[in-house]
Image (cartoon, rainbow over all chains, first blue to last red; front, side, top):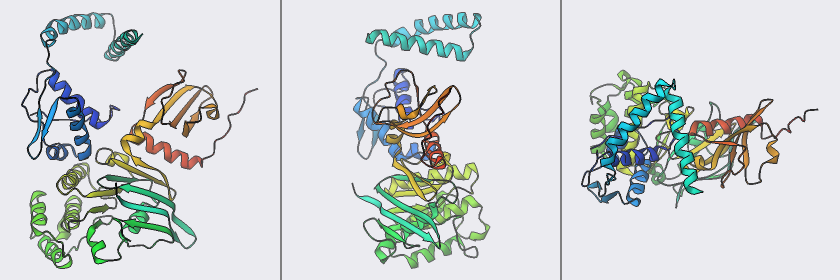
Amino acid sequence: MIEFHLDSRSGVAPYQQVVQQVRHALRLGLLEVGDQLPTVKEVVASLAINPNTVLKAYKELEHLGLVAARPGIGTFVIKTLTDDSLAAHGPLRRDLERWLSKARRAGLDDESIDALFRDVVRSAAAEDVA
Amino acid sequence: MTAVIEANGLGKRYRQTWALSECTLAIPAGKVVGLVGPNGAGKTTLLHLSVGLLQPTAGSITVLGGRPGTTPDQLARVGFVAQDAPVYAGLSIRDHLRFGARMNPSWDMALAEDRVARVGLQPHQRAGELSGGQRAQLALTLAVARRPELLVLDEPVASLDPLARREFLQGLMEIVVEHGASVILSSHLVADLERVCDYVVVLVDSRVQVAGDIDDLLATHHRLTGARRDPDALPRDQQVISESHTDRQSTLVVRTEGPVLDPSWSVQQLDLEDLVLAYMTRSVQGNRRPKLETRP
C-alpha cells in the first residue's frame, strides 16, 4: 500500500498530484499488478481532502488503463509502468549522478540545475514537435 | 443535475444596509462548497437565509427544492452548525444525544454514538468542559446524526488550533464519503478550504464575485506578466479580473476559456488563494478599468 501526500505550494492540482504519485510508484516498481490503492475513505481521512478529488484521480488512472475499480472492494493496479526501460534506470541514474557532480563542481546550485534540466527537457520536446 | 441551493436575485437588507444583494447562484448537489470572503461580506447572512433563520428582503432562495425552514421535512433535510459551534454547556454529551433523538424523527443514534467514540469524547462529559475542537466535533455530530442531505457550517474551523482544524475537516470529509451529503461551509481563510472544497463562492461587499467548480475556475484563470501595456488592448475573450502596473511591468489576472496565445506574456497558473484574492482586489477597485497614463 502506498501513502499519498499533498504539496499545497506546488501549483499542481491535488487530483493531479495523486495521479502523479501513483504513476511514479508504478514506474519505480513500488506498486505492482494486483496491489490495492488506498480506499477513498482512507485517503480522505488521512489527508483531509475532498473525496471527489480522490475519485477524480482514480477515474483518470482507470481511464489510463492503469487501475480497475472493483465495486465494494477497492481499486487495484492492473498494469505497471515498469516496462523494459526499468533495466536502463540504473546506468542512466549513474550517468545523471556523474553529470550532477560535474554541475556542482561548475558552481551550479540546486535551483540552477533544476532550471537547466527542465529547460533542456522542454526544448528537446519542442524540437520533437517541430 | 439538481441544485442544492438555488438563489435568484436574493437580497437581505438591515435598515438601510444591504448585507447581501443580487445574489444569483445554482450550486449542484454532491459538492463541498467553500463560501469565502472577508469578515462582514455577508457570508453568515447567506447561510442564515439558506437554513431559514432569515427571510429574504428581495429575490428568492430554494434549498433542496423547497423554501428553507418552512416545513418539518425541509428542516430535517438540512443540518446547520452556527458560528462557534453552540452547545448546552450544562448538559452532558449523552444528554445532547438524547435531546437530539427527541427532537428529530430522523435521528440516527448509532451514528451519533459511533462518532462520539471515534472523536474521543466521553458521554458523561459536560459540554462546558470541552475544548474548542471537541465542541466543534460535538456540534458536527449533532448536525450529522439527523442524516441531513445538506450540511451548512458557518466558520466551523475559525476558532480551532491547526490540529483540531485538521481533525475536524478529516471527520467532515469522512461524513461526505459515508453519507454522500452536500456541504457548504464558510471561512475567511482560503487555506482552510483549499483541500476540502470542490466548489467555491467568493462573496465580497455583499455581492457574489464569482462562483464555480474550483478545477474549472483554476483552468480558466491565468496570471499574465509582461511589459507594461493597456489591458483594454487584450483579445475580447480575455476578461481582466485584477491588474497592477509598475512603470515597466503589467501583471494581470484574466479569465478566458481559450489559451493565451500572445507570446510576450509570461503565463502562470493560479492557486485558489490567488484566484480569491484577485476577485477581492477587483471588488476593491470597483470594477473600474483605469486607462493607463500615456507618457509624454
